[in-house]
Amino acid sequence: MAPQTWSAQPPPSISVRSAVHLRDIGAATVNDLAQTLALSRTSVENAVSSLVRRGLVVEAPATGGRGAGRPARHFQFHRSAGAVVGADIGVASIRVVIADLAGAVIAQRFFPGVDQQVGGAAKLSAVIADIRATLADAALPATRVRAIGVALPGIVDDAGHVVTSVIIPEWSGVDIGSQLHAAFGCPVAVDNGVRLAAVAEHHLGVAQLVDDVLYLSVGNRISMGLILGGRPRRGMHNVAGDIGRLAFRGLNAQTGQILWRTAATAQEVFEQAATGDAEAQDELDAFVDEVAHGIAMLIMTVDPAMVVIGGGLSAAHEQFLDPLRRAIPQHIRLPFEIPVVEARLGADAAAHGALVHAFRRHSGAVHGIDGMPVPLITPRDAATTSRTRARETA
Image (cartoon, rainbow, N blue to C red):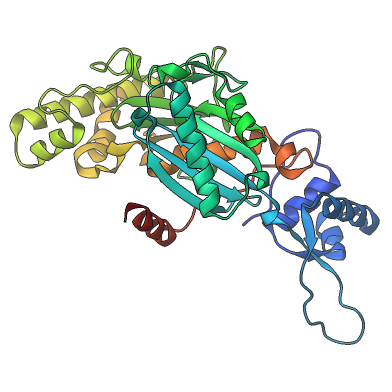
């Protein structure tokens, strides 16, 4: 991994620079750090001593050295000193991921959604129970959790309060973050799920090298998130990007739910079209053209460098994504094309975006020092995830 680059002002402290080097590059001696960071040995030694006292850095196991004399002490980032939780709360499923302090996901679980619970309190209790179950599976006590990030459907203000949610109406006006803080005793960062899915695709997904991204989730509903200048765009009233039900005609005006005519679900429409049903194919063609028209309108408004398509329909390449790519230029008719790509993280995007949000919003609480940048979140490998899913569905 390349060394962390800095753009924020003021410049990071020596402690932060040392910690980031040990986290992102690997174990090093004080002399190594001083030479790499172009700092005096004394200042680096003081910084490392401070990091050791805070528990963020530990002495690495001694390695056999050559020659006489005591080998130089190596220090390493204490990635297991704490953990950060990301939770994606939906009506159909709840996804919980846990990462160590270096950003590696060490546990991941999937649970039934909150629609199985009656009332706002019961829904919240289910989320708390799911987080606790994931911690227990990872053999992590709740006291090790430094921060929690939460993605949920609804308009969420910058302080993390749910202004309104048509998907989970019982939580409208509720400070979900404070409720979870009371349950786990750590800071909580809450934001809109599609916005955090866009954050995840920008931070660790398909749009890592692009700072102006239009993220569109197309599944049961159509919803959107924006990354502009490398940061999620909230807007004055925290509704930037909440345009799905307006930009795309034929949706439920309240929820953005896609309304199908020839079958009850998208899957059924796609299956019927694939078997030669002309009416279903006509509806699918009209849907693709409508989505292309809406995206073209958004492209001309925002002028992004990339359009990322997430949600359940993004994986339907031949029937949806490929025709969509061909249709968008027909609506724009400009001498350039903006890449339209499938999201890399799929249904896991919002939970991983919640991790990024927690690391970013509560960096001081997570690391014990201010100014630490968000680590590169590393999802669990596909094989491990498959084994976990198999155990949970057995």
